[in-house]
Amino acid sequence: MATVKFEEALARLETIVSELERGDLTLDDSMRIFEEGMKLSKTCLKMLEDAERKVEILVRDKDGHKRARTFELDVMTGMGQEREEDTEGGKNGGTASE
Image (cartoon, rainbow, N blue to C red; front, side):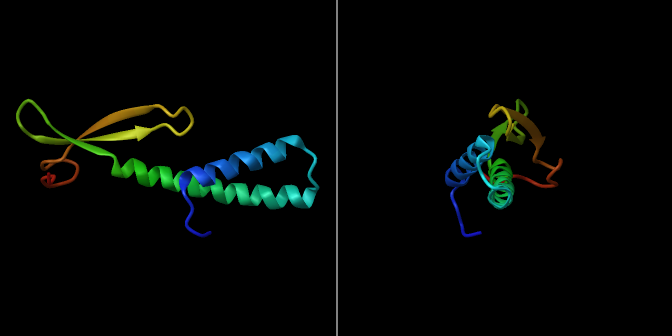
């Protein structure tokens, strides 16, 4: 699949769902767009996972240590939640750069 923007992939996926829900397609057409929808779904999920890994906010705790807060997005609800990780000798094994 060629490079596609998330919003475009999601819009096409929504169109596919609507077409399938109408129920007026032939079996062959239904299977064809279902397969397209599955590919788009995987593409969107990968894009969201990649974006999730990139969203980190560096902060300092009360002792001056750098910590990374990863913002995790719940795909189903669209709600976010922060998870704190120690970036100085902790999980990442080194010092985070500024």
